[in-house]
Image 1: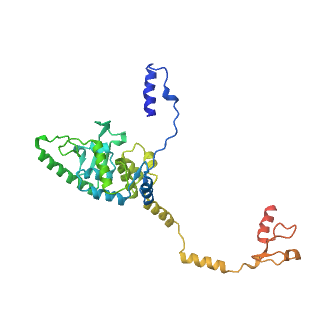
Image 2: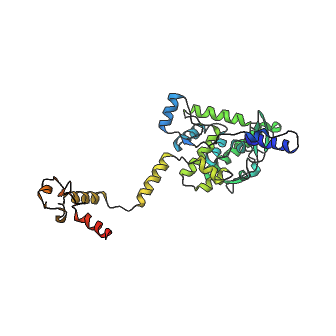
Image 3: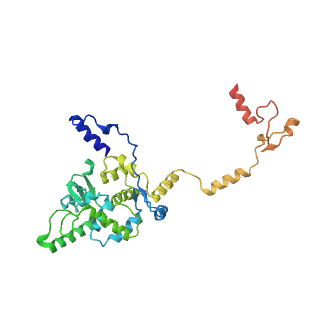
Length: 323
């Protein structure tokens, strides 16, 4: 908001419509992009106890699967499937056209999106330059979209001349464009019915990114899949990963370090403890004063007066350094 005001008032200042740009003197606290957190059991328990939910949360693979299984019979299931698997934005999914979809090649192109301004909608370009992208599709998603195209063809036949040919992939029963807010409402109803912890529809896109990282997809590929303008945005948003992925990473690092077997380490440890101290480490007291000193490991606790250290193994290197 500040950047927009700064630009608008800057233009007004250049045109001499105002005497100065007041937005240039505004000091804002440094913002930080919210990180996506996973709905783990402890977070779910805290949410149920306090009602406070994280600003950006993603489902685990099990939770995402439960949502999709519960939504499988809904008419708009193919849209939510596509968002969950490939991470499209809401406006990109609503504005997706059949002419930009090639199921034989298992790809689709993001060339436009439906933007909501208040309640009014309009078709515009993708959010960023990198938002115009080609998205690869897995075999399961291709099968879902083929089935959906057949369903839509059946609806077109039923509506006959009343059918509105918008060319969009996801539409109302009469072929007209879906309203983005309607899609959000349906999504919220479905995840509540499934008894899942709450996420926003946009967080389903975040879930798709987290699942891709969990599957071992490189960060750059995930960034391109999401249409982010820079790799830094992807890295800042998804620095938290699924717990199972973090545990697997910790185990992978531990496996890189070559170690003896646990039995061999225990044998070495017990053998070293059982050994007697070396003879040269045991000193016989040379005078009555040192003889009165208690011994620890064969060495006097305190040295005789005037002696820096009675241990020849320590004393010799010191003398060598001094010489």
